[in-house]
Image (cartoon, rainbow, N blue to C red; front, side):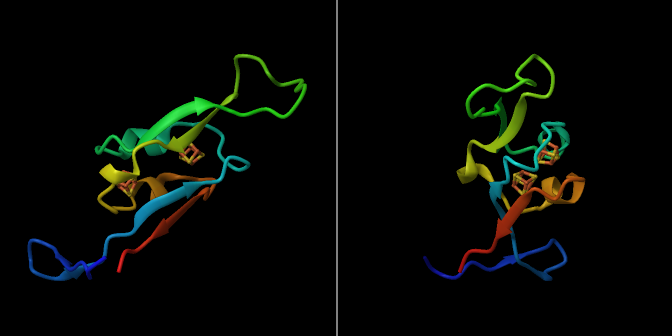
Length: 93
Ligand code: SF4
Ligand code: SF4
């Protein structure tokens, strides 16, 4: 992929950092990242349980997923709002 160069309105170079992954072990499904993202990238999904799980009820069984990474503009708002630091973000070359 060719090198991407982006600039702010003030023509200062800006390097997008696109969301790559959300750690399903750390995410608590709070939805904060979903609320700050205006690009339809993220989606709450059922937490994948392994075997019987005593907490497998209606509470706390969702986690966030990167459903549409192709829509991400790399603003990192989702990463800043996440208290659990679940996400990894990457740059493209
Ligand atoms: S980096 Fe920005 S555009 Fe991408 S998922 Fe996070 S909030 Fe949405
Ligand atoms: S803000 Fe963090 S903990 Fe909350 S749903 Fe998003 S990734 Fe999960």
